[in-house]
Image (cartoon, rainbow, N blue to C red; front, side):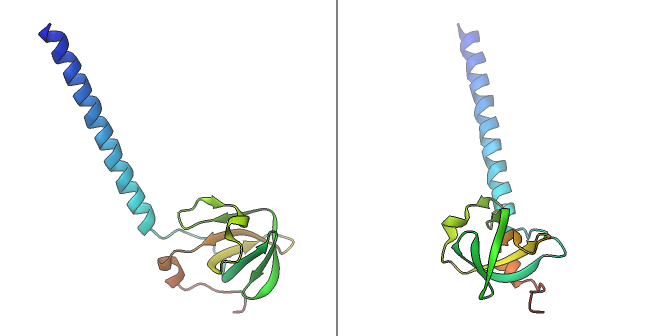
Length: 122
């Protein structure tokens, strides 16, 4: 009987250690992701975006439009729905598609916003 009990105990201890290690790894990766600066395309411009009623936006105070299939990424690089951002002035990097509409948008962290980037007015 002791052999079965010891085998079960050692297996459950190994599973606990594995779960603890995975949890610690996830915490480390999450903190690393928050402190790192993302790489943006060279043609990305800086601006202040306000979603009015998608696809209508203002970019640096001028009326503009999001392209069909436009992607807005939050500070943790997750894709956000434009209707959740209505009325919020956001410092962003963005690119335009061939027809001139805003296509890719990245909402910037404070560290990313502090880095120099060309804007449309430059």
